[in-house]
Amino acid sequence: MIRIHVINPNSTASMTSQIARAAEAARSTGSVIDAETAANTPASIEGYSDEAMAVPAMLAAIRAAEGRGASAHVIACFDDPGLAAAREVASGPVIGICQAAVQVAMTVATRFSVITTLPRSVPVIEDLVAHYGAASRCRRVRAVDLPVLALEADPESARAKLLDEARAAIRVDGVDAIILGCAGMAELCDWLSREVGIPVIDGVAAAVKLAEALASAGFRTSKAGAYAYPRDKSGDLQPPSSASRAAEKVGASGVR
Image 1: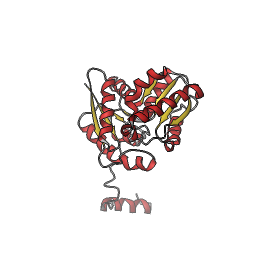
Image 2: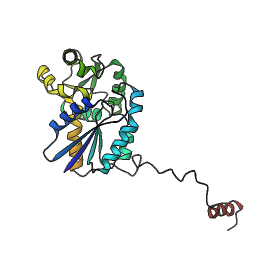
Image 3: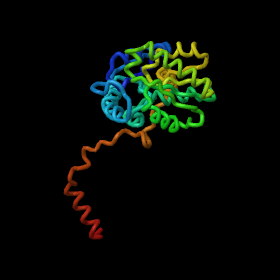
Image 4: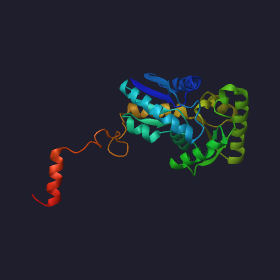
């Protein structure tokens, strides 16, 4: 059985519930979704500071899920916060929803745009897309200019703005796929795809399917290089033993 640990790095439980529904809809028979809300983190992640405050609790949740037998992990925030750090602490694959969505978009379309929440998220996502090698395929990162939590608080306005931006992406950007740039948009994916007539990619679904594929094939996170487990530094500041001090003195004097 494949157990996919889906961690929402923010502390909004209702968003975790929506993410869990999207993950459940995407999972295969025989896979289990363990969705979790990070504790004592920002209510939403809207910038670098929020990301930094969310990562410690997220890493703790991933470590705990490893102990419960998680096969793979999905970080359900489109900024992919702490992704490299999470891969250090996990033995199974760790998938960020931005990276997963970009990889799917590059496979099923020639050009895509991303639609996110606030304008301040645009440069963050542009940098991520470039980091994942897709800058030449991404035509634009657009924003509906709504806070993350407004997607749930004002769903009608969110739908209207999202539809406007999607149509503009097709008309102006000339794209043949759209990526939803926020985990809170996950349940709008099928509706928007029907409205605009091109593939609309939700990162939660993309990440769950990629996590399943990697876990079922037996792939693990490499521990040979930069993703090696963090070092135990508890002994680094201990004074050297008398034997090691004596050896150092012998070495310094040149006596053998």
